[in-house]
Length: 265
Ligand SMILES: Nc1ncnc2c1ncn2[C@@H]1O[C@H](COP(=O)(O)OP(=O)(O)O)[C@@H](O)[C@H]1O
Ligand SMILES: Cc1ncc(COP(=O)(O)O)c(C=O)c1O
Image 1: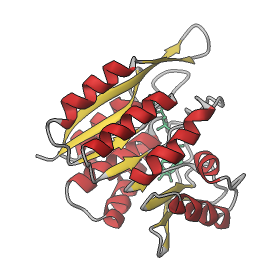
Image 2: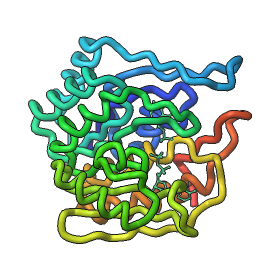
Image 3: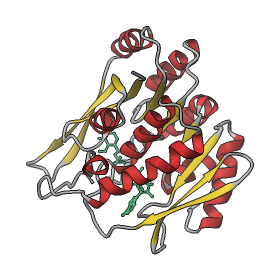
C-alpha cells in the first residue's frame, strides 16, 4: 500500500481541502494521511462567507512528525494560509527528503475573491517551488507566482509556466480550467523541455467546488503508485473531469465535485 500525505486545510463542507484529498487518495487505492494547517468554516447566516482558523505551528509540526515517521511515498500541499505554515511545511519536506511533492498553491477559494494572505504567495515562490515535482496553479495563482499577468491566453500561460519552472518547480501545470476563454477545459504542462496542452470536455457547471484539490490529489496518488509525471497528470485530468461532470448541489451556496465519479462510471 502506497502512503500519501496532504498538508492542507480542512474544508468543513467536504468538497475541497483535506476532505477532497483523502477521498481522492482512497479512490486511487492509496493510504491517505493528513497534516492539518487551518480550518475553514462557512457561515449559513451570512451568505456562506468563509472563516479561516489557522492552527498553531507546534500542532502542525507534531502532525508532520507523526506522518513523516511512517515513510511517505508522495505528498501534496494545499491551503497553507500563512508564511509561518509554509516555512514549517517546507522545512519538514526537506528534512525528510520526500521526493514526490505536488504543490497546489491555493490562494483563493472559488467564489471568494479575497487573497488569503499576500505574503503567502512570496513564501510559496521562495520556499515551496524549489521542492515541487509538480506545481498546479490556476490562472490567478500562476500570475501571482510568475509576475506575468493578467493571464488570458495560452501564450500567456506558456510565459508564466516558463517563469515558474525557472523558479525551481520541475514540472508546471497551469490550469486554464473554467477561467480560460476556450471551448475546451485546457491546461498547459511544461517540464522545462516541452509544452503539452491537456484538453478535455468543458462542463457547463458551477458545481466545481474542490476541483483543484481533487486534481492535485489525483496527481499525488498517481505518482505514489509509480506513474511517471506526464502519465500521472494525464490520468488526474481524466479523474477530475469525471468528478466535475458529476458535481452536485450541496445547498444554495455550494456544489462540490463528485470525487468518486471516475470509478463509478
Ligand atoms: N468546467 C470545467 N469542465 C471541465 N474541466 C474543468 C472545468 N473547470 C475546471 N476544470 C479542470 O479541473 C482542474 C482543476 O481546475 P480549476 O477548477 O480551474 O482549479 P482551481 O480549483 O485551482 O481554480 C483542471 O484540470 C481544469 O482544467
Ligand atoms: C481548505 C480549503 N482548501 C482549498 C480550497 C480550494 O478549493 P478548490 O479546489 O475549489 O480550488 C478551499 C476552498 O474552499 C478550502 O476551503
